Length: 367
Ligand code: SF4
Image 1: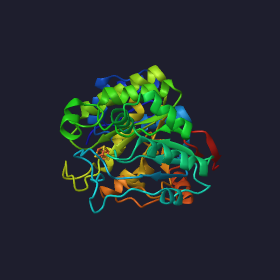
Image 2: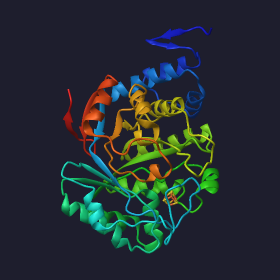
Image 3: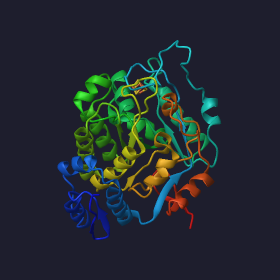
Image 4: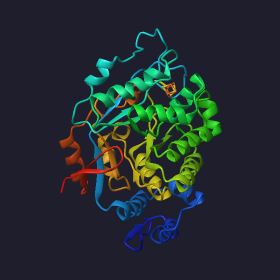
């Protein structure tokens, strides 16, 4: 049996983690090599304790959630990313385009955040995207709108020859308050060439978020893991994000997204719960300048998300409603989780539920 070493309250099976723990306690930034080492360790319990320490230093026992709805207005997309089960072509039997009525039917006065992402539609004018934001904003002015990934902004830019700044200004005037973090996938030229050659690469993704931050628009960031990427590429991705955050301070939360195997079958099975927890913990340790780390329960399931609240995550997303993208890839999570269920889930993890808005302003603390 391996021996157990105890250092400042954490029991270690993997001695190599002890110097990392010393740096974490001293508030020192972890290196690329540290990050790769953390992703390779089998000492998951110690990793979780270290990440939980950092999470606690930032927000105490709080865990945030939001009453939200995901709106995916169309699955029609000009691209064919090979990990994507969601996109269809115009005329496909299961292609859809939501009407204004269908969009508004998904929202009510209780919803604090609407998250809008979808396909790169070949024939919708840019005004249709702006109209969706305006429509929601006019009907529900107190609902904050988080809309369109950097991949979509890049598409709007190329398709209609608009500057990024003009795109942001028009969306903001219509009612958009922040940007989601999707479309990042993995910041690796190798992975991009294999899986999503037509989509914005990492330099462009970062440039768009930099511009948004410089205009006062906050955003999130993601990393799609569990397919063909290497552990080194995951850490490099986090370091690119950390560098941009040093520069702008505009990111709110980081969300590791587990690849959903679906029908694309890039790998035979999805990442294990242990791998999901490892990613949450390593994200919390590496992204020292990100205020929040989100456990996206839609992809990792409620049970793993609940455990992750002791592995560095301090946000569990929200009630979501009808999500189409992950479920097109056969995500097994229930569609929509009610407020009471989320509050109970957070309390069961020994944490304090805090309802928030899209910008992490606290709405209600469930003491
Ligand atoms: S991932 Fe996004 S851009 Fe790529 S095919 Fe799917 S919907 Fe289109």
